[in-house]
Length: 205
Image 1: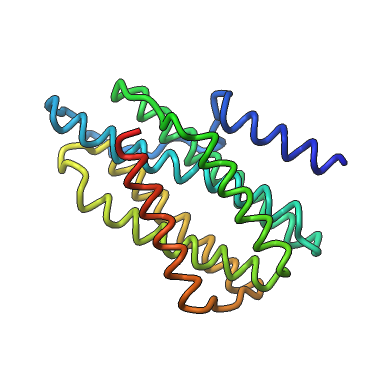
Image 2 (image 1 turned 180 degrees about the vertical axis):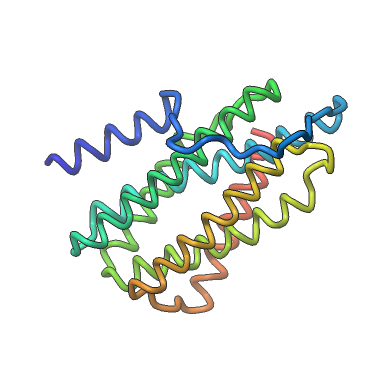
């Protein structure tokens, strides 16, 4: 019951409170950001997508920690979730700076990701960890794409995305080292298709 209440509390905090980072927001020394209206709008859309990704990360890690059979693995999931909270705070702050709002569908994204996390967790820790590995690899590739698409002068957003990319790669390696299995190709393709729907929708809504 305590874990369930904790999961509900985590959902409410993710969706309706201002996240607090434990690490300073990444910056590029002496590089100020100056954007035109079109560049600002483009950056805001990309950072909204990244914010949605962090909302989903909170849901996935919460669900997988809830279902894990291993106290050590549960601790690892919770530690990774805390790092993802930094990402959530950084992307929220950057959206505020750009004068943009988060996705209106965040409760829907959270619920869907939490359900996927529960399913993966119920299939056992090796599958759950494999799901983390594949998710983080796809997120890393997605963030690399955003680094290529963000305006060259948006140093603030680029610094945040670069640090997030490094953290996601580390999470994938940690999950693989903890015993994550390689997921079947059809599962990977389904995950990519679902992520495509989410990112395309969140770009606008």
